[in-house]
Every structure is written in C-alpha cells, then in structure tokens.
Length: 83
Figure (tube, rainbow, N blue to C red):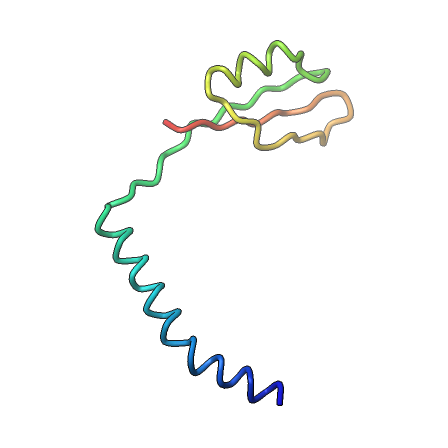
C-alpha cells in the first residue's frame, strides 16, 4: 500500500516539480542574477578581540565566518564582506 502511494505521488508530482525547477532556472537566467564577490580579512589575537573592535568591524560590513584556535596562545579570526 505504501509503495503504491509513493509510486502514484511520484508519477503525479514528478513532472510538476521538474517544470517548476525549469521555470525557476529560466527566471534566474533572465534576471541575470550576479553572485557578489567577497573580500576577506584575517586577524590574529593573543586574546579574544575586544567587543569594541568587533563592533567596529561589523559597522564596516565585516561578518565573522570562522575562528581558528589551533595554537594554544592565539587565535585567528576570519571575516568576509561583499566587494
């Protein structure tokens, strides 16, 4: 019973989902959506950066994407923002 239900749903909804996907792709191509480039910035700190430093970077449009704490004494903070 369950297999038959999934089979019927696949037959009924399959072509519709493919058509919807094609329509969305065509709209994206027609609009010529541009993917923004990114600028990156790395900051090394012996301690965690001060909140005021992070707020300043945020005001400039920088977004924290990763913190690397491999070394026991320092950490690397990686930021990105659109070009």
